Length: 217
Image (cartoon, rainbow, N blue to C red; front, side, top):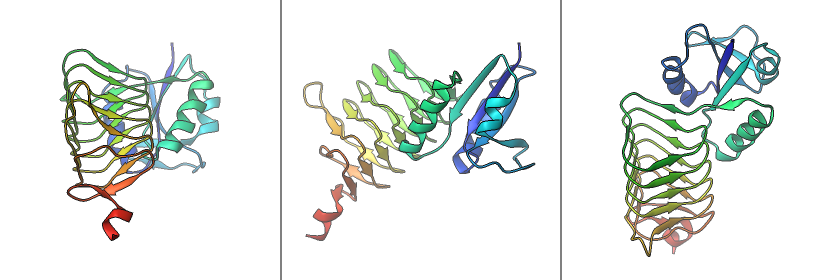
């Protein structure tokens, strides 16, 4: 049985992710970067860069993919296109990731080195947990959510689909009856300290985190 594995995206995050995949694949399997634009005969960090069409055309019994692109809308489109084409989403976890009890993780997740998921957590598809990021107990995280490096998401937090949490941000814990909620598509700036709910689509930054409009007033 022949297998092909692909990291979709050859930028910075893709280059961080491909060593994790290289450590996981079976002997004899092929490993590539995939990009939307065909770049003939290019290699990145020792791996060939191929187009999506080439990935589709390569003969193989099984094709696996991981999407290493930060933009959640683009990630969603690529994930759906590859899955609908019959390719299998592949989740990656570094050897030193800590995952405790009763963690449910959707397809296509990437858990970078030194990240930690504690207990009783539910996470949707195509989740990115970057270096040193942390998710506390009883959190619920939607689809296509990104935690940048060093994020501290404390217990009883709800992060809805397509939210982006910037590097070093801290989200205060909620309670079982009153979780802290980060709305769909919200963006939390790097280093922000979130002490209250963030509406869907909002962009907040600072300590305490406030929207740009609030900061000017």
